[in-house]
Image 1: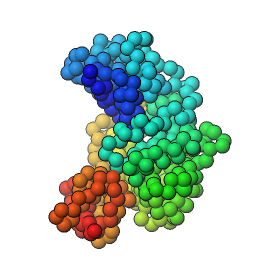
Image 2: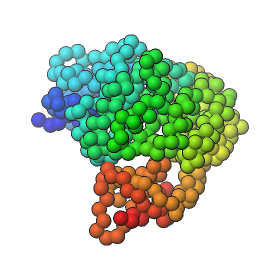
Image 3: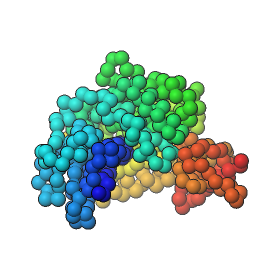
Image 4: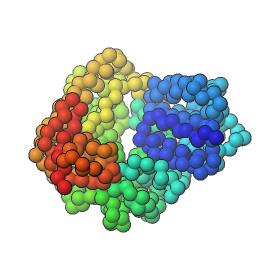
Amino acid sequence: MAETRVVTLGCRLNTLESEIMAAGARNAGVGDAIIINTCAVTAEAERQGRQTIRKLARENPDARIIVTGCAAQLHPETFSRMDEVDRVVGNMEKLDATVLSAAHGPDMVVSDIMEARETAGHLIDVPVISGFEERTRAFVQIQQGCDHRCTFCIIPFGRGPNRSAPVAAIIEQVRLLVQNGHFEVVLTGVDISSYGTDIDELPALGQLSRTILDAVPDLKRLRLTSLDPAAIDDDIYRLLADEPRFMPHLHLSLQAADDTILKRMKRRHSRDMAFDVVRRARDARPDTVFGADLIAGFPTETDAMFENTLKAVKQMELTFLHVFPYSIRPGTPAARMPAVPGNIAKERARHLREAGDQTLHQLLEKSVGTTVEVLVEQGHSGHSQHFVPVDLTATAGVVFPVGGIVKARAESIDQDRGRLIARFAA
């Protein structure tokens, strides 16, 4: 019997949840099935999901096709009507192996996600840990859902309200991952900056991070995924200042740096607030590196508004950018706003990426001659503490331990690939 295959579309959180589904399916003996974990961040993402389903069904005519993820949660009937699909499973049910493994039962198992209140059921358990085969960085989901209503975003209706996992369960998961050989852990979720805001007894994200580091002394590195500039608590800055195991690389859910556009996006931060986050972080630890999510060509964005965002990339020295030309997401308020022509949005996205490439090059230049600590992810490559990609060199016969952390001296830059070349000295 063929093993169940999970195909992931979309975000890093989907990737983590696909690991859980794959392990659950193995443990439950599910076979001859393909699970497609869909994305709904744009209409194009949903179209690609349907295209992927049809392609996989053609290539695997004997496999059961199970569709889940945000697109399935939002539009279950659309997927259920597809001839290729055997079952549609909602986001609340997809981590339940008994639902995935049921050979019989309803063709559509999708609950009202806005009624979701669970906080710990999604956490990785012991059998799933073996799914992280590369033994490098591992992801721990600390919360689910989002209570905000950005005008361009449909995801809260696919993921439900914010709900935080218990501290003890998170610590236990991190401890198990470290025991299994992972030296770097990344805290992830839909809106991790809102961790703890749903339950009075829970700490904020910064205190949770410190508690994890204190409770698991063998953890070498702790990272955070995307942060909301409006909700970064003071403990984050204190960790940057006094905890070397807390990585000096923060990624901001910025989206724009023009106040008018931020208001029309219904974001909670202003341009000045974003600059203040960067200033405070670098006051705490001067070598802190920032990445950001940015949307180019949001409805009503003028050339002058765009220039404010473009200038901010350079002024804030944002290095690792995730840039998206605005894409209409039906069902959102932004879809009813006056649109920027698609070719202009794409051109603005190109300019943002070029600006990000320039600041990354500046960072790489400053890194040459310094010692970098590299988490080895493949035979001769990995990422530094600043999440800079690094290729390692050494004398003949040296074998770099995958999952280990080594110190190396940055000697040059691979311009074409945007990477440091660093020599390891035993």
